[in-house]
Image: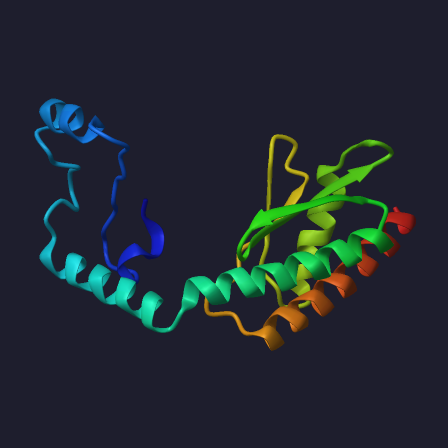
Length: 165
């Protein structure tokens, strides 16, 4: 695990089930490398975890993720090239198809329209046809709605550009 675990400081973590920790420790000597035992990063991580708990950010991510997924599913009903919406919490994806097949071309068009309209997204998946949205867990209800509006505008623009090509 990594990324925001220490609020931007260099730190990663590893999780185990059951007694696997004993086997891992014997093989590795207990060190994960560069970031092992970095005191300042550990303190930053503790503060990050405390902030996540105190500000109820996981609960916020769940609620905002449900709102985002609902909005994306409503858009899926209006745009035939959006064939699936899936994700957990704030991390959501829209799978894009054209003519019954995964469409990287349309996904890239949508991603570029999103960027132009002020929303960052990436394309992922085996065929690079899934638009992945990863808002921060601090996102507000109003920001989710604004994001859905931008996504709708971008889907419309991409669909119009599809006809022009």
